[in-house]
Image (tube, rainbow, N blue to C red; front, side, top):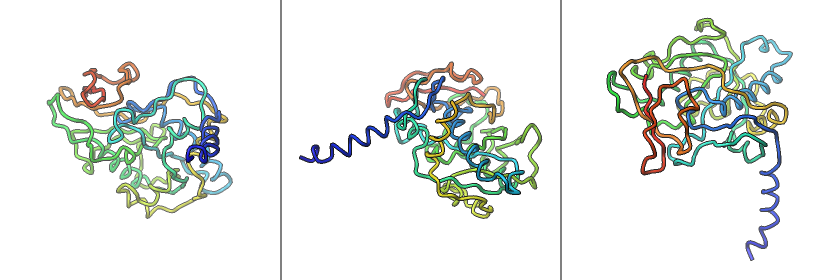
Length: 283
């Protein structure tokens, strides 16, 4: 009887999540989003940037460099070995938009100084354990640090040195358009309502001026973007500092393939008993 009563609503939900929204010529997955630039994050960053640019158009703040803050929401961890984005090339539906952006956050555009941006990235780098130089078998990821707090600021490039503790200059060589970041530089940064409110240990962001907070769900912004554009490969943004003779392992989805990130020196250690695939990353 319950199934009969809910059948019409269930049919409407299925119709919604199967609704076509666009197409991708490349597979999108988050298997390596914690260790390298990632196309599944880049499409969200591009959608946010596109929308923020329209919000800022015609205002004095439109002259500010525009950054887009994103974080990997589906990156395993407590969600288990199936908790990854894994979208094949081909048609995209609303279901895929929900994979790309899980949470009901809304868009928020803030003004941030270079010093604030540097602190943002330093806080984000806390995802990684402090590694011991010269050790080859040590865990890379801190399991107590949720992946949704690992923010990446699209539009910058930077280096993370995991042998340095977070908060002590772990992030270095931050650049915008190839030029070193100045502490007094001003940026417009499009992020989400959770982060702009200081969520995830980013309390310093609450001091930033809010330029726009239209209340529009980020997922809707992603959907609108995919109606018009196709996902593209991730541009270079961040990388690990070289530490010869040092390595660390991390777990990811069972379908992950080493060839997907040719720039990294990875050893495939195979499937673990809990269903994750383990890789060793040599620095």
